[in-house]
Every structure is written in structure tokens, then in C-alpha cells.
Amino acid sequence: MGCAGFTCSKNSLCALNILYVMVSLLMIGIAAWGKWFGLVSSFQVVGGVVAVGVFLFFVALAGLVGAMKHHQVLLFFYMIVLFVVFVVQFSVSSACLAINKEQQDHLLEVGWNNSQTMQRDVEKSLNCCGFRHVDYNGTCEAACFPNAACSACAAEIQEHAGEVLRVVGGIGLFFSFTEILGVWITYRFRNQKDPRANPSAFL
Image (tube, rainbow, N blue to C red; front, side, top):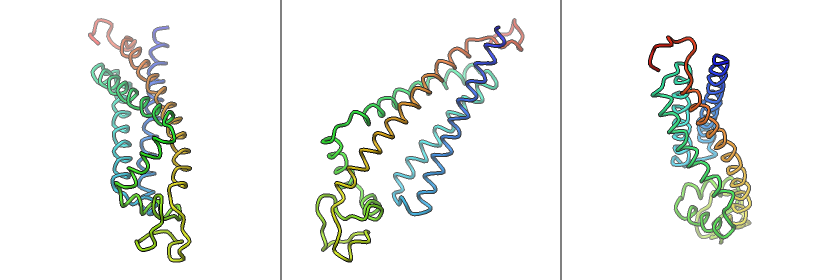
């Protein structure tokens, strides 16, 4: 029974970390694809997504190596890091789902005013100009601008932002529960004796 329990915990932990590796590579790939095809020109956005992907990749790799080798120290640090990630991700996901329309509008306007690059990306992709008002004396990346037929971007952004926040919040909550599951499996696995090891050896 002990061997079966040990093997089950080890396989579950390996499978969970393989999933995290795949998610991290997907994040890096999507960020690179968006930059390559000009969908996102902001280096801060792309860099942020890539940094999160790389961090998740190394955390998952540490968990995978720790599970394969039943390495006590590596499993301990993996468990601590995963718990911290769970707390942060659960908080952010809950905030995404709980944010009201007024707070959302304020955050969008602050983000708009703080990034010229993001403004150009949004104007080009949503075919709109300006946040609340269209200024035809300025410049705009939208296709409608030369024809003076543009609308302001605020309504379009708010519609898309609401959907994005719900999706991001839902996905974030789902993965936060997989992380707390990973912490529990790691704790359980770490305290089990390897049936293949010398029974008198210190683990």
C-alpha cells in the first residue's frame, strides 16, 4: 500500500508539473507570436508575459526534478513558492471577478494615459481613436482616421475588458486551485518514504 501511495503521489506531482511546463511554454509562445505578427508592440506587455512564463517554467522544472528524485530540499522550496504563487494568483483572480464598472473605467483610463504604445495597439486593432474623444488634429493608427469616421475607444475597450477580466479571473481561479492541490500533493509526497531507498537511510 505504501509503495502504491508513493508511486501515485509521485505520478500526480509529475503530471501536474508537466501541465505547468506546457502552460509556461504556451505563454511564452503566445507572447512571441503576438510580437512577431505586430498584434502587440509594447515591450513591457510582451516582456511581462514572457517573464511570468519563464518563472512558471523554472518552478515547474524544480517540482518535476524534486518529484523524480524525491529531493527533500527542492520539494520544500517548491512547496513554499507554489503556495506564494497560489495566494497572489487567487487574490488577483478574485479582484478581476469582483471589480465593478466604475473601478474598471478608472483603471482603463489610467492605463490608456500611461502608455502611448498601448494606445496605438488598441486604436489599430479596434479601429477607433482617442479614449473618450476623437481628435482629428492629432495622429491615429486606425484605418477610419483618414476618412474622419472614427468613434472613441472607451466603449469598445470597456466591452472587451469586461470579457477579458471574466475569462482571466476564471482561468486564474482554476489554476490557483491546481496550485493548492500541488502544495498538498507535495507535502504528502515529501513525508512519504521511498520504498526503493534503504530503510535506515535519512530522507
